[in-house]
Length: 87
Image (cartoon, rainbow, N blue to C red):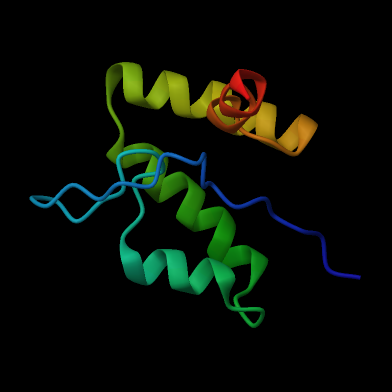
């Protein structure tokens, strides 16, 4: 069975109109579509993770890494966890 690479979506889904990158995960719309495609190889996903992290700077990179790690370990991003706790 193919190992699942967790999507970098951290539930902050707004696109910067200048760069075309999502504020949360720094992916383009086409990159998001490729992540959802069942035929996309894990090799591409791993390279994509490196690429999107390299797009981030400063606090965005640090908070992304923390939230993504939480998602990998617990199945939910920190942003989504906080939203659910408010309900």
